[in-house]
Length: 129
Image 1 (cartoon, one colour):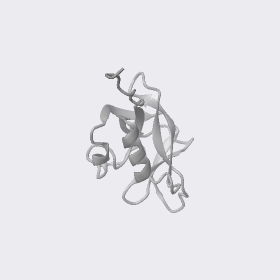
Image 2: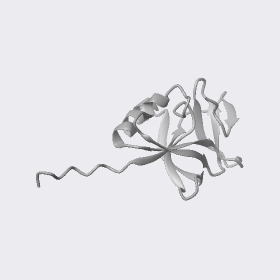
Image 3: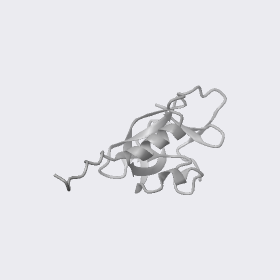
Image 4: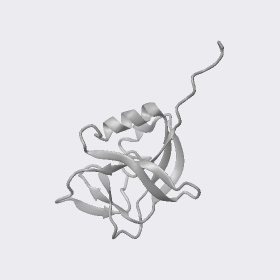
């Protein structure tokens, strides 16, 4: 049929916690995407300072989880973010993370830091922007 459109690929829910958040230096990378609001991981995750940006890692000692924002991003944006986050270089891995908030959403994709943490400062649950 001449009026049919190609189906749009599904959007991805993405938990962000650092420089992509509102007010962060890389927030512009989310232009045109949908913010679903504040979010928090379940306990068991923490942030480390990597200089000008944070890295999220699993930490079974954590009791608070990590605070951030939940976004719905399209495939094009996700590909650009994967490049920004250095997936091809092994800097980060994009994987699911369990969420405690917002209510009704139990998981999203996020970027986990994938390199050595020796000499890095643990920050806890929040990256200020």
